[in-house]
Length: 489
Image (cartoon, rainbow, N blue to C red):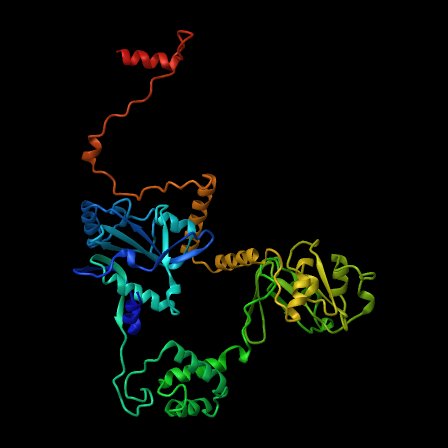
């Protein structure tokens, strides 16, 4: 495999819509040499996966060749053990590799959208599912390209929607700032890449208003003592630009103790309004969440969505309008809230938020002092959020499970219609498996073309069962007596 990875160093993957037919006359590898590992991926999603079918007969190989070489490929006409167990749709392609030396067929599925485990198992007809072992190298894309190199060395026939192409190389130019020092093409090792990027992140100027970054890049790609000597100028410039644009130079954090479900609201805020200058009808209209509407804004019209959160903030305050005895309460009634918003609200020691609802019984939340965030959290989350603010990354019990729920929630929101169809089918297959108490699911056969009328004419006549007969004796059931009478005739 390492030899194949070395060959793939200067290649890239090109994808096509229709599988290209390739015949490999001689080969030094077989399907069993591929770096594949079997997985059990319940709850996970996949874009590429494999299934191996062994002991394929010559007759079946001929049938595979006829179907895959046709002008229009109909996977439903493939032999049952090779055709997918469910409809592929346009987002997923079936690729086949025939190892003629071992009479083995490799099913290679590639999808542009993630597929749930239930659909993956259905495509493989309940058989073992394999994926590439990306741990054999530090670069996962290089592992994929190395696998394609190995596939090209398996004797037999292949129908693939992806193929390797040679990268264009720069002609050697001595002294060219986009070449390397020796005049050859730019080709560095992964460790050299990491060292160069680290050097850029540490030393490159952040500003570029006076071409500081550009000058720094020009000087360093020509400096023989620089880790980025000989690097292409456009790559160095891109790295410098990324350093300037990324999150205002803030370090990215990948952990947060609070998850989206139950904690997220997207509000519309009316801040620092002088209520005495606004008619009560306008205030009521702003807080009315019963319908979707357009409103005038500073630069363009803004859209308010039905049941959207509305927050009204104001610097005016009449202390007598705040309800009494709220030391132990985090909410107030509708009448109290209505009284407050009907008058000026100035120097309020608290913030009141009414979550979007058309019902008067909706809770109005009261936040006091520094509790604007904490008071919205459950008792389970408060202590962990406090630890997070102190720099302690602690996870409460069940955090990982809820994190997966959040990921599924976001995935469902962003999923296309085809992805939702795959998820619906995956959930169906999972429910079947649970009902069968982990027994293997019998996947329906791939639909085939309807039989010709001549074949239908030769089918035997189907007779209806005999009618229910009255019982004549104590020994036999009425239906048994009728069956005996029919056979005796």
